[in-house]
Image (cartoon, rainbow over all chains, first blue to last red; front, side):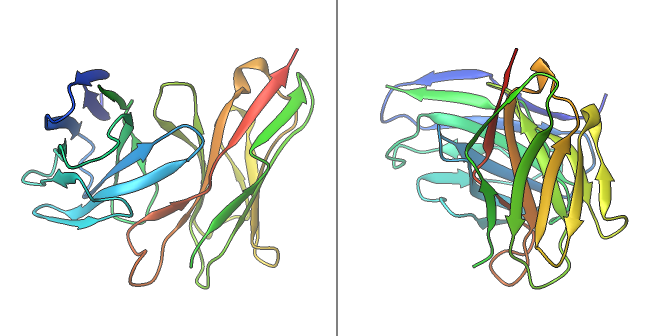
Length: 112
Length: 116
């Protein structure tokens, strides 16, 4: 059954800690994306990767880091430098960059 | 800058009434256009897409959208609203140019409320 998985669904961390959010896809898609969603603010692009071993900053990359060592995986690390990390994080993939994106179920991160 | 505008952050309809969610986009090249639906605490689900074939696009759950180049619009419609249609809807356009190629540009979303 093809799709995108994000784990965990809910994540709680203390301020000052780095945390890594998982995103895996078995759709054989080249491109992958990370978005942040806050109430009333729509989707904001954090990072995206058009191909393995390459990624670009999105609109709000500060305080985040990513890697793309495998086609199937695009983990996002929320570092302690991110001032307001509490949010709903969505991962997506597309067969090639610029085409329709398919989204995972999201991870809700709460930092206190 | 490339943009997508969804007119009305909240739309309320009665069950059985027509649903019309408006989307206008800016693009100087033939765009790909998309509508997504999001239920609370879930990811976005693709409703339908326009990729330069037929201008009237049919999607899932009875939704359809019409691409109108002269109006730069891609409004989403459904003839008869169902309670299960209550959700947030996002319009998106394929990005172009050095800063947007490879991305989708999303609108701010429209929350659809369906009243019994």
